[in-house]
Image (cartoon, rainbow, N blue to C red):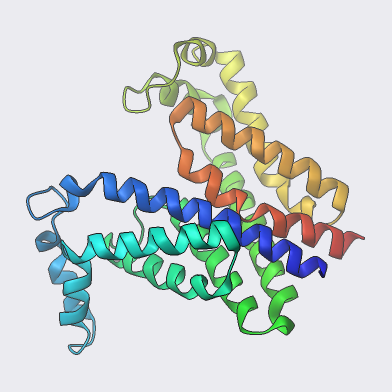
Length: 260
C-alpha cells in the first residue's frame, strides 16, 4: 500500500465518522426542520427561485420533509459504509448529500465544520477518480486546513477583545455554551484569559509551519487535537473536532512530503 493510499484510507474513515455525526444531529433536530418547525422548508423555498426551473421541483422534494429525512438517512448509510470500509463508491454519495444539506441551510448548518467537511470530500472524490490525482488531492486538503487555522488566527489577532482575552471570558460566561464552572472561573481572571487567547492565536497563525517539516506536522496536529478537545469540553463544539480531524492525516502527509 502506497503512502497516499494509506492516508486516503484514514482520511475517508475519519470523514465518514464526521458525516455520520452530522447526519445523526440533523435527524435528531427533525422537529425544527419539519413542516411545523422554525426551520420549515416553506420559509426557505423562495431561495430556489435563483436555480434553473428544471431543478426546482426535484430539489423541493429532496429538501422538504419528508424527503430531507431520506437524504439524511442515505447520508448516514454512506457515512457508515465509508467509516467501516473506506470504499470509494460511497464518497460521491457523501459529497452529493453534503451539497444538498448545505442548500437546505443556505450554505452551511454549522459554518466552518461544514466547509472543512466539504474540502475533505472534494479531495477524496478527486483522488477516487484517478490515482494520479491522489497526491494533489491530499496537498489540497492539507493546504486548506492550514489556511483555515492561519486565517482564523489573523482575524483573531486583529480583534482587540481577542488580544485582551475579554472574548474568552465572555464566551465562557455565556449561558448558551454552558461552559464548565471551573473553566468559567479560570477564564474570568484577566491574566488567564489573556494567556489562553494568545496561545490560541499563536497556534492558529503558526499552523502553516506544519507543512514544512514532518516533526512540525506532528506537533501541530497534536496541539490541534488538544485545542479541539478543549473546545468540545468547554463549549460543546463537537463538530469541529471531527471535521478537522479528517484533514490532519493530509497535513502529516504534506509535512513529510514537502519537508522530508
